[in-house]
Image 1 (spheres, rainbow, N blue to C red):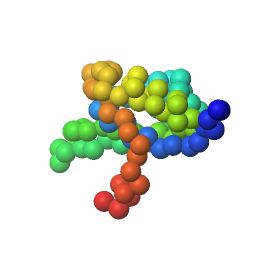
Image 2 (cartoon, rainbow, N blue to C red):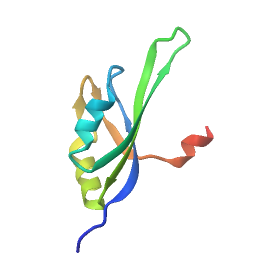
Image 3 (cartoon, helix red, strand yellow):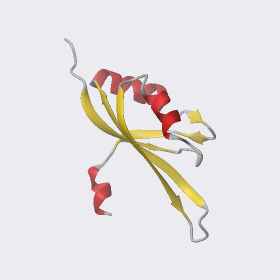
Length: 94
């Protein structure tokens, strides 16, 4: 049974503050077609980055999503430990 790829929005936490869209594109395009990347850096009162994460829109099958999560989630990359999950739409209401 062939699985139809569908658009998913992933939350990717634990990123280095210096991460680029190109690096994320390269890392995640192995699993599906990346259509959009949004990198968010939260800063403290002095403007020092405290947390960097990304939202990635990617079209992939359920099988490729599971493969992506099993290979990349909780792995060390560029000084951080990746935390990957399906994005919760409730983030818009915070």
